Amino acid sequence: MDLGFFEGFKMGLDLLWSMLTAEPLLTLGIIIFFGGCLLFAFIIQLLNEHKLRQSGISDVDKMTGRKFEEYLHALLKTKGYYVQLTPASGDYGADLILSTKGKKIIVQAKRYKKNVGVKAVQEVASAKSHYKADECWVITNSFFTEQAKKLASSNKVVLIDRKQLIGWMLQENKSQKEINKTAI
Image (tube, rainbow, N blue to C red; front, side, top):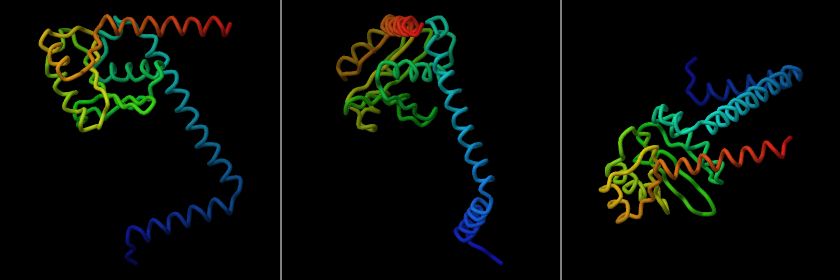
């Protein structure tokens, strides 16, 4: 008997449905199991984000590029943005997509030891039309070259350097301390 994909898929769904409806305890057990797994994954994600937000600039300086993107994801969420990470490769020059009040912002994250040059500005500026974004930013744990600043200015790219990033970090730590005080 040669079944096509859809016929086999439908047969599998029918079998699963008949098993679930025949044994209510099995159904309840499966629902509890998957609900528990989702809850566990959610708690782990919250703990990871909390740990990332506790990072200082020296921790950021030791992060990989992708970990820095995840750190910015957690930090920018606390600033009121809906944040989406793009795939690690094939991102067309945007590492994060921020949304707030009808505005779309793309972010190029650069965790560098040296100053960030024009390439990052070029990448995010060209990604702006691809993502149909209203703004584009480059965020770094370092600083920017003069050429990068000039190109950013002429392309309306917002540059967030080490000093501004530390300011955001201090602001987040201050608000966390205030939350902790009110919780006690």
